[in-house]
Amino acid sequence: MQDVSNCPKCKSENAYFDGQLFNCPDCAHEWNNTQAAGDPAPETTAGNNFCDAYGNLLVDGDSVTVIKDLKVKGTSSSVKVGTKVKNIRLVDSSDGHNIACKIEGFGAMNLKSEFVKKA
Image (cartoon, rainbow, N blue to C red; front, side):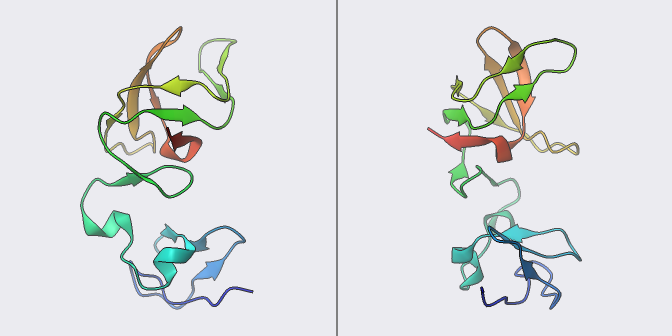
């Protein structure tokens, strides 16, 4: 069992470990094991830092790979696992879609960083 520390964002004592990430039910902040050891969380070091599904920091212009089949609204097709997306742009969106990109065969769309890994 993991030793649970206070949330690095709001300092709440209600944090818990769900098997992969530490979670804070009070502020909905998630952090990985290396951040629990006292490292600052990427979201708190600067305003618009986003991480991929494995905790790697993403920046504008990166290439990423989709790690899950993603259904595309309004069509019967989906973006398949392993699809490489080049030259991403990070955006701060209220709906959680924080990557703006163009995918060959689909055109411009937004993705959530939790469904990609840095290439």
